[in-house]
Image (cartoon, rainbow, N blue to C red; front, top):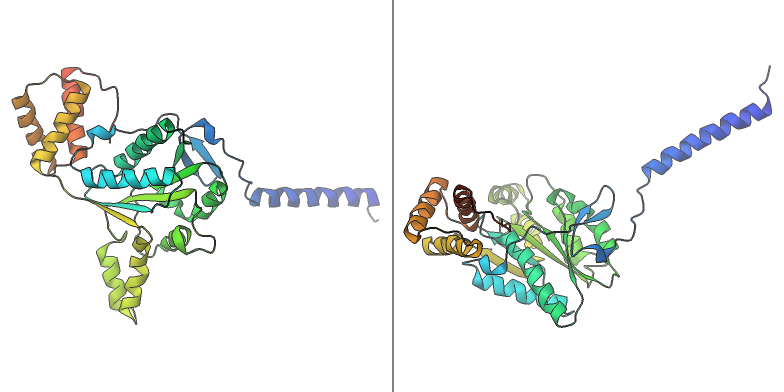
Length: 299
């Protein structure tokens, strides 16, 4: 006995609906237009293709960044030119850990915003993209392209290892793609490595390649996409003590100068290094022991 036509139609419609629902779930959701007036800083979430506003950025005042005067002035000048609509370069801040690379990017963003806004200009937006999300850069650029705002896209601790080929996506977005980098976007990155890849990885490429020079050029050319290379080096003892003293003065921590010097040096010795991060960690310990609240944060 054949089923009634209306039952066949109903089953077919139900099957088609389930297929349509499954296909809809597979298709990426179109990104909604972000509300860039909601904040001055955002975090990119590629899974949902959204920019999450950051109401309060974890940043340190520019005056507290010691021992990096030259790179500070260079980055601020580059950022200010970009904010005013003038030509500017992508920047790679590389070098010793804990010396204020990411802190400088965030401080420069705040300082330039204050300057440009005071002169009647628009607000500069800071967008953080995580290292593991670099492959989604084209999607982010498409979202920013054509906006009336200007953006610093910032990736902290950028580096590539082993067989990781996502660096090719970054190369294309920065300069080499058919569309290129949008005029209203600049890319800042921090890394402990000047060429963003470990030396042994580059040595392996040289040893196994038919043409060693070409293999190395492929890797090094990524860093060439950054017009500014700003190097951060280990600080001297005097620079380290100046960082500690700067924090103590800023937060008005009551401590004897001789005690401060002795404790700060001992702290650095136990940590095995001197840097802005080590200085901040000591000041946190000192403030905690003395019961002094820190009303701002630094990193």
